Length: 149
Image (cartoon, rainbow, N blue to C red; front, side, top):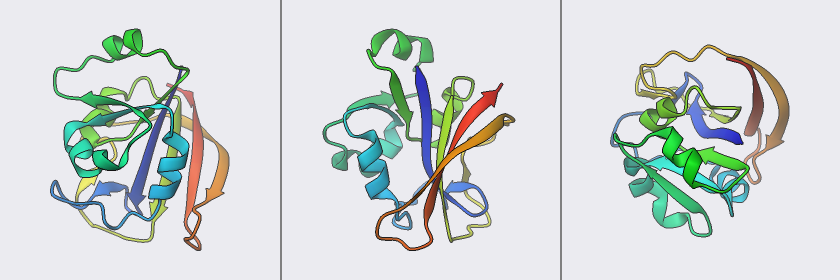
């Protein structure tokens, strides 16, 4: 199964400025929508509360502190699972991620919520593809394959 972590990030590696960030700074929502349409998308309850109402035609997998990845993998019938945050959800899947789809935005927070929260993630990756974000000049999504754990 492909486990794809998909995220908008600041130039300094944050997915949110703080825990109350409404993510209004992200400009790649169209790419997210197009790529995840018809697929399973795992998201933490806080992230779902922020953007969940705009996620029709997806199989949403809500994540909480009691969720176990094995239960998810045994339940879903799919070749692809997108992981859409937040940091706690990203941490839960940290050892299973096969691909990273990251869209760096031209903003620096200085502090905030990191992609994997306080967990360390050291992997070798291979850049597979760069796609332009439609309607946003000079905004690109970088698609990496994780090649070693």
